[in-house]
Length: 256
Image (cartoon, rainbow, N blue to C red):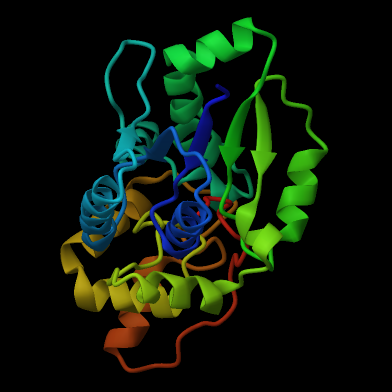
């Protein structure tokens, strides 16, 4: 049988997608979550709780994969940034952090997973489910332009025309709670309001984000916000000044 693999992002879209696949009794053989090491505690708690729910439904638990360096050691994106005196690549307009810490670890796992190996040896492709929602058809169209010899990609949320609100409704309908946005707590795509929220809810994580920003050797950009530093956002918040609304507002391309 051809393996069916879920690329699980840990957030609303991918959670709703898995629930929908189960409701339609579609095959799921492997659910992969690539951990950058920078998710908020709520996301890690959700992955564990959702794995328990999946197991109760007779489906596999979520398999967590991480980036391994050439020396064979795990390295988080945060550790890489501190080592390289740099910010996540999205701050500079690139998407290497997603490729290196999200896509590559999943590919490496599958390259050593026997069901996938057997499928490729037979000249067939594995099926991979991606959780782009109904408003992200452009991402699926862009992906379709790239030939992949190993995977056929399916976008169930687009197929079902599920938008964000529908995904939230589906999750609530099965009694799953507290599914938050999945993203690195130091993601340069964060909006000023999200930075302030981090300051209020996870001050320890904010300090780690500021350490990345302070440690980076910057020339063309000002900080994690690209056009502004996160440290300035916090100073303005503490001084009760109006937060800046302009910045680098591009998506990080991580699938929720």
